[in-house]
Image 1 (cartoon, rainbow, N blue to C red):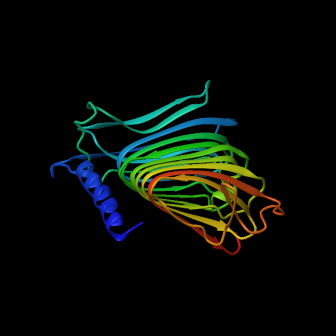
Image 2: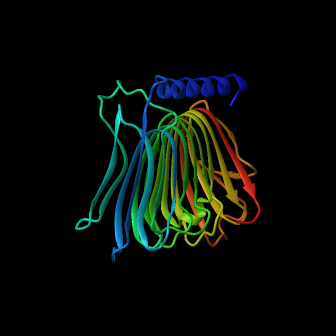
Image 3: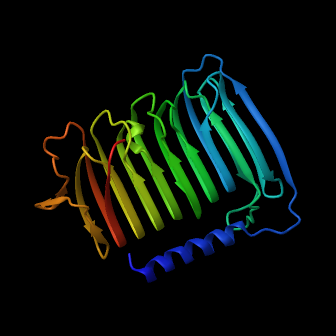
Length: 286
């Protein structure tokens, strides 16, 4: 991506973030703590919604189904803590009290949410604006569906997932996002959709099976980090996006890593990018 385009991307993201975080100085924040012990649950359908501020999601204690510490602006939000044991559905975070477009958000809002790593979980996480740190290493994730707005977000699988996931899906708006050690997710399929911003997708980790991936990027840059030894095949459809292939070899309409045919584990990827840059980087180890 050119320097001028990079400046435009960052300016758009910064403006969107500033507009969403603007709030009167007289905001009165409330604090809530909610938790539930594990009572034999084996599966969990978890939904987390957080409008703006600072969010952290992490593995919790084995014997706690969940724990949430929340600080929120009660003029525009109410706390969301809803669990139905019969269906296994859990909803945490905040819910807006106003119509869309009327909300003015406080950057001092924050939430720390932990989920039991011993329960097989389908996680649906929606985050609006601000900063998010999502640590999923050592969880038992069946699937992940994560979306962010105007934010700076880091998602990490620092340790291998306890189960094989079906899908890891990430969608980012005007955002700077980094997803680390995706190989540890043990997912069958990876999906990333980006609007305006910068994304780093790090596919290092303890790969246990082959997988597929699709990347759809609008105006922005994507950096792809792969461990040496992983067989990678990329088919790309890019309009004005540059492609730094990192030594991959073109065969027909696809790009192949060296040693792809002999690799024990493979990642087949499709990329659709409109304007920006795609960069491939190879790293040693996991």
